[in-house]
Length: 348
Image (cartoon, rainbow, N blue to C red; front, side):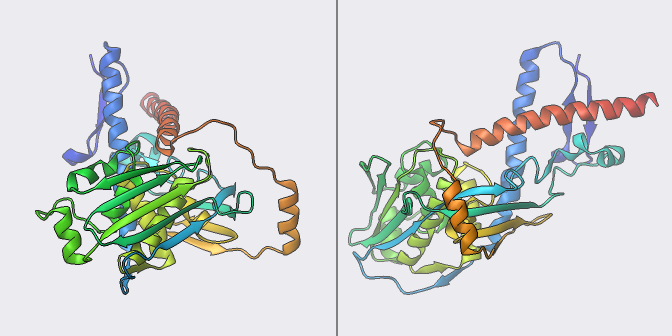
């Protein structure tokens, strides 16, 4: 027998909270459904950042000229995890909030807390470790070149729209570059026109995109977000459109949701902007990220450089998987909190 409460007044806002089940298998299935719903709500909320993405029209560079963008990475000094669920938002508020539970309403995702992170851009061995470059090609095709830590290159030639449809599969080769092409609207995967026809009509050329990172995959230095920003910046100039800084920060948020990797909302600001900075995301929606550079004395910078040591643990992680793990534990503890609060009201 299922025991549950129904909260919410509209069909798409109905949430069932199960306390007991005669079948552990059914309970696991229900949990997976709610977890999927959680990620959908987060994705829809973060996608509101797209309204702050505005591009400025510019002239196309000559065919064959490389447009290059390189960037440092970032380390967080304070405020980590305040820029991402579960701290920034209250998920399934009817379960976790006494006030909402008493009202019997459903807020789905409520951004009740803003995020504040202090971070600093750093070079590795005095070099900017991530970068991207883009150039126009005479042939109407897309060429993707991936360069890893060992400097080996993987070359992918896309001559059909179907070659780009894996843009939302993070583990697919070249997924980040394909997602950037979609976000920058270089190609329209829903168009009846072929890839060659789209490129020919808009740009009279194709594009070659090359990215590199001299860091281990999943190093935790915001590499993927910062690399996405560098790639969008170079791709924008190569395709005749420029991003200002706020637009670029929010375009990365949009790209990460298209790519389905998720992650924090300040990683890209940590590397795309120089020095020390305070990055904030305010309460409520739409999600808007702002960064303020902090003036630090040269003496303090020298002291930090003399006393900080960066080393790699050898453990890799995908931001999406890490976020999923943290959310599961948060939901577990918050659910029990709701149970205790509810039982307290019923017995009082």
